[in-house]
Amino acid sequence: MGVADPVLVVDFGAQYAQLIARRVREAHVYSEIVPHTITAAEMAARKPSGVILSGGPKSVNVESAPLLDPAIYDIGVPVLGICYGAQLIARQLGGRVDNTGQGEYGRTTLTLTSNGPAPSVLFGSVPPEFDVWMSHFDAIAAPALGFRVTALTAAVPVAALEDPRRGIYGVQFHPEVAHTYGGQEILKAFLYDVCGCRPAWTMTSVIEASVEAIRAQVGGERVICGLSGGVDSAVAAALVHKAVGDRLTCVFVDTGLLRAGEADQVEATFREQFNVDLVHVKAADRFLGALDDVVDPERKRKIIGETFIRVFEEAAADLGEARFLVQGTLYPDIIESGTKDAAKIKSHHNVGGLPDDMQFELVEPLRNLFKDEVRAVGEELGLPEEIVWRQPFPGPGLAVRIVGTVTAERVGILQAADAIVTEEIRRAGLYRELWQSFAVLPVVRTVGVMGDERTYAYPIIIRAVTSDDAMTADWARLPNDVLERLSSRIINEVPGINRVAYDITSKPPGTIEWE
Image 1 (spheres, rainbow, N blue to C red):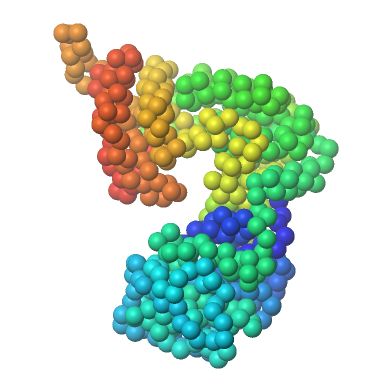
Image 2 (cartoon, rainbow, N blue to C red; image 1 turned 45 degrees about the vertical axis):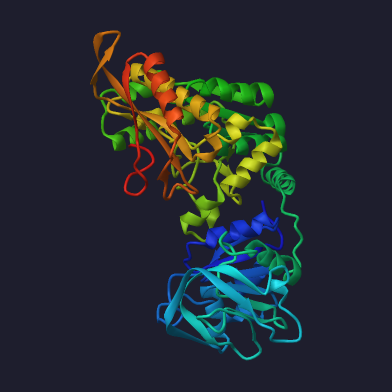
């Protein structure tokens, strides 16, 4: 799916580069992240409507500082520099950036100046003084010729600068961060009033563009999709089905390691609601057999990945006329790949690991979207809430939530306990507030007393975390009454369980999953 006239976010290694791109999209303007090594010719070829330079961890004055091709300032495209980006603009165009010995971190009061014949177009919707979020040590000491200072703080004389004639703007603070008052309005002013963008990036336009691109790619040929039941592959399948109709066949491999009722839900959604040609491969015995007596989690993952590949290849072989394979690759996957030619990425896929020598041509309709945008597309396409808002689930399934050897009995126990966790979290209205909430089954026995008799059964560990991106996570402070219901129900309703514990470890030092 190609999008004309994007706003390009140049990444200088900032933790906020993705956030900037997301904020631009929240203004209904399409954005993409590009490396700082992009040349002026490469950028001009993309025909951007605007360029935003991100912050970065380095000083612009050190020898190894990442730079921008200076010819980019002369291609006639508006530029906004944020933090490091603003300092780079000043330094590359003839200004001065100094280490003042006094940095600014966190909430800072910004004061607009009255320099020039008219107020800055960026600050038309904010008061003369307001709080912003700062994170810098160096500071712009003197702007380049042709620039005027539009804001300052108590610590730095140049907190914002601009040369409207050239369409170049810089702000030392972070408008993309929620702590900056009016930050989104400042970004909108740059996008709408400076770049001339229209708020046309909507989920309806995404779907229309995707359908057109899919049809152009596959023509009249058949397409297959490795459907996992997760939100990414489900939305990708629904989008491709809208484009090609009955020329799509979905292959759903039931590993026997899915959540309770998941296979039935996938089948009902795609076979009945969307009338998709669905091949349901029931391979639980094969997977459990391959995992017999395996304890090491890395071996589990490799065995499951290899088995999935073989089962999928066998199923796909029966559909030999299909040349195109649908994947639910997302935009963060492409960013993290670090490659300039994202079409060749093999490390990010949603079908369990495909061999390098595969003969399929990939169809990746979500490759320009973030996770929240994928969910919005799913809702627009009519996918049920249970799939669109499903929490992340590990590729190897429940095998890595059973800490020890995997058996059919233990899978059944964990499925039952996990279903209670999901039900009670939903009942408490917390499901969409949590990144993940699930049950873990350690293969150990604990002593208990039930009905005046001694028991020797398994414990269940409940894990619930909050996160934005799974890179870091905090354990969720679930209400005591919710924890009490979870414990009571699991012990009373799941045979083989006599104890429930709650994991209060954040990431780091722990991980979200136990294995």
